[in-house]
Figure 1 (tube, rainbow, N blue to C red):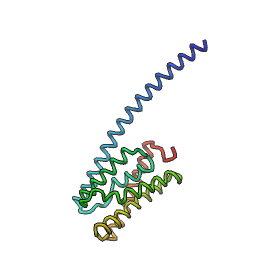
Figure 2: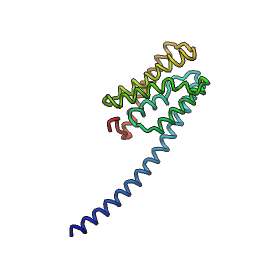
Figure 3: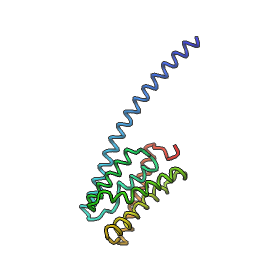
Figure 4: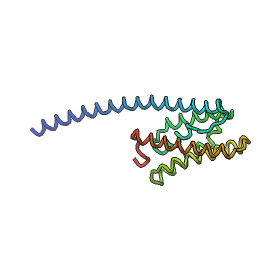
Length: 181
């Protein structure tokens, strides 16, 4: 009797695991398509800002990169976003790898945060602001010789704060675990 019950239960459990794996695969495919379309939309908005307004006010891909570094560490998606940021810097400044000047330090800082500190929204905001400070003062100010304007910098910081908080809250609503999961 016990053997039959055990066999029936294990058979039911195996079928349930198979259904669960299939459902997770479909769930990931839907999110992959949504994520890809979101990244392409953010790239178009970033490039459109630069070509329509003449300045790059809110770097949306940088904000998404900082949020995903701390909440959803998947190397393929992060490398795609980093590649698109390099492509974006090629469109803006005619230098492909100049985006690595701020991408590498914030990636190392994010790995330090993930390893040694408890999860917090402040880390995401600190990464986004550190990336923007490096971009404004090191890339544009030092390497390219473009002097930063104070009201432009303040407006950029405000936009980055708003967008980073919105992305962080959206990622949490979607159910993505923090860095200790």
